[in-house]
Image (cartoon, rainbow, N blue to C red; front, side, top):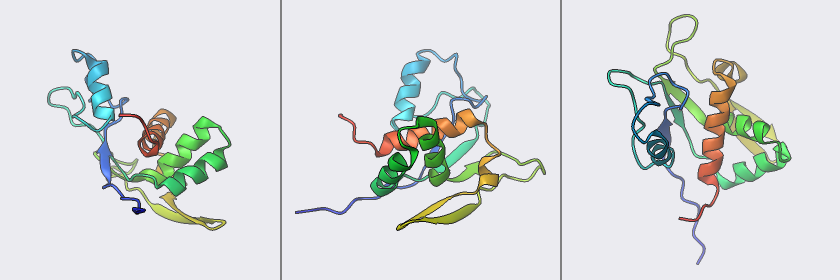
Length: 146
């Protein structure tokens, strides 16, 4: 019997670069690994509120397409993956003081229809955060031994 892919719910993620992350927490590296694997909460400084990114999981087709498109160039793969996965952000204001909104666009590339964050939406984030988000979503769609 063949089973169809099961899509997993969207998820929220706090960047390791957020100032609210408590990098001085005891056993930080272990706690962060558990958090990154989706099995616990991030270590946050008392009284701080981090920015939370809302991400969707990449489909296997999107991942394969991105791997082919990036031709082994890891940074390009991660930026493209972040663009596809990023659907929202909480706790971040734009230059106008209003909450930052992730605008979505659709691009048709051959037979593939890619829904992604607009360039303007992505330009609000430092490159290291986009690389982190993209790396995370690529990692989560890649089969790993338990």
